[in-house]
Each structure stands twice: as structure tokens, then as C-alpha cells.
Length: 409
Image (cartoon, rainbow, N blue to C red; front, side, top):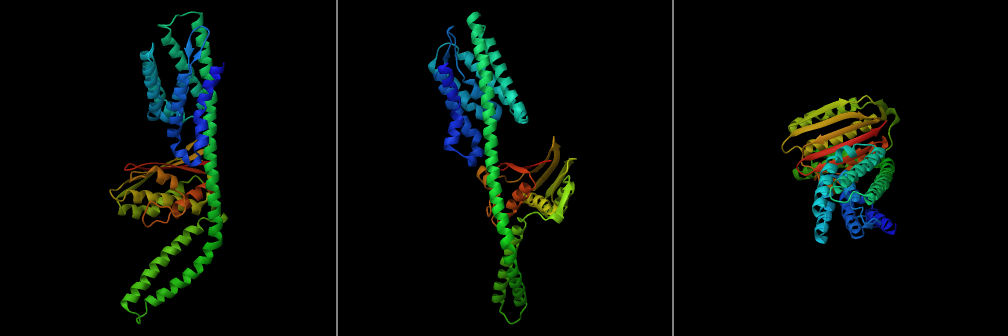
């Protein structure tokens, strides 16, 4: 029993390691971090196997291995896979070939189940992982029966292995789901606080700034029409007017961060809003040989500020078009429903972004464009947040970017 509890403690290493050394800002690298710590768990379990009175020994090495394969697929599971087989080769003894073959089957089968597993709800993921653990151990015991004595001790081993793996797997997957949910909630709280500060700042300052800007802009326009100033002085005035226009645009972006205007609130299935943004940007898209395609399959409705949502789509579409301006392409917008959620996927085939750039999206004054202020994406995140939605971004350099927006109904 002591060794069993020690093995269970080893399986908690990924959780303890993540809580001690990392926080919510590391969520984008969560799979790599968890895989490394899980590999440490695998090695520790192999170092301290559980020995039964019947003479059989077993350990819990395959639990973190199966978990990594189910959650993060083939590449991440290669780390514990290599650890299992290299360590088994170093210690030698019987069962090296059997261990290699069994771990290879687990790697392939569980990795193939990765996408199906992630598409399930939380409770079904827990059940799926328990079933995967159960069937894996049944398969392991079946292969073991060909060369191990098939006696009373073997049946005791079977009960211990299947029962332990099933129970521990259910506990650990439940903990992982809770951990992931907590990290996401923490990020949402941080985003909410940031958006609240921006909203209060924009509401109290933007109007006061716009008034003197408007007056200054008017006087400079009159001055630029004067015949008493030199050509060089007129150039200075033109530069000043350009900078004033840029300042007015920034103030306008700030104004969109204020609270939703109730006269603009509307119950909609988002068809008009997505098509409105497309129609607005069609001339701009044609300039860069970009085709905009909308695939609409949604009957659910959501209550939101129509003006903000239109501007939200315009900003995302515009970024997608600009990402493809070098060689053109297709901007695909898909609006669908899943259970009680409206799903919006906006995909381009542009230059893409790094993980660091993705994690910085939505922060004020951060932009991947030289002339960008970053406030457009802040407005996007803010509008989606106020409508009760979430936004996720996937991107690869040279392959494009996907914005996935979810609105619960």
C-alpha cells in the first residue's frame, strides 16, 4: 500500500510542478510543461514498482503516458514514450520487446483518439479516459498471459492492475479538467479587469480629448489654405493634419471601448453583422486579390450591441486581408451552431503569427503591424467579452491564422 501511495504521489508531480513554477500566462505551453513533468512521473513509477505477494510486479507508468497522448497527441506523447523504452532498455531483463510493442500500440491508438477525445464534453472525456485505461490494461494482461503463468496469482494481478489504473485515471483526468478550467477562468478574470479599466478610461477621457483635437484640426485646415505661408510651412501643416487624423482615429477606437449603447442592442443570429463587414471590406479585399467567403449554418440568436459587433468583425476581417496582401488568398468565415453555442471561425492563409504574438493579442498598443496601434484587437476582445463570448486564436508562421469565437446562448 505504501508503494502504491508513493506511485500516486509521483503522478501528482505534473500538477505540483505546474502550480509551483508556472501560472496562467504559461497556458499556451501547458502541453509541453505537463509532458515534461509527466515524463518525470513515468520514470519515478518505474523506479519504484508495486510488488504483490504473488510475486508479480507492476507500476503506473502508462497512466501519464495515456493522458498525454489523449490530450496533446502524438508529438507530446513521444517524450514519455521514449523515456519508457530507453529506461526499460537500460535496466534490461525480461519483457523488453513486449514493453516496446505494447507502448508503441498505446502511442498510436491513443494519439489517433486525440481529436475525438478533445471534442467531447468534460464528463465524457473523463469516462473516455477511464475506458481507454481499462481496455489498455485488458490488452496488456492478455498479451502477458501468453508467457506468464496463468494461475491464481495472475488473477490477483489482473484485479489490482485494472482496478488501480481505472481509479487513478479517473481521479487524475478529473484533476486535469479542473486545472484547465481554473487556468481559463483566471485568464478571463484578468481580461475582464483589463477591459474594465480600458472602458472607464475611454469613457472619461476620450470625449475631452476629441474636442480640442477637432478645433485644432479645423484651424490647421484653414491655415493650409492660406496663400501667405511658404511651401515648406504648408508641408509642416500637412504633416500636422495627418498626425491629428491618426490621433482622432485612436480616440475613436477608445470610444468604442465604452459600455454598449442600448439603442444599438439587438437580438440576432449574426448573419447580417458578418455580411455587413464583408460588404464594407470587399473593395479593400479586391485591392489585395483576397476573396471573402461566408458559410452560414446557424439558427441561434444572441443579444448584443450591433454596432460593436459589426466593428469587431470588420477589424478581424481587415487583419486577415492584410495578412494575405503579399500573395492574395481566401478569407473564410464560417458561422455554425453546436448545442447551445454560436461558433464563428475566421480563417486566413496569410503570414501567420508566433505563439508570443498570439499571447500578446488584445493588449493595448501591441500590434504586429508597423503603423498599428493595437487598439483594434483590444476592441475585438472587449466586444466579444461584453457579449459573453470567448475567443481563441490558432496560427502558424507562413500558414495563416484562425480566430475561433464562441457565444453561449
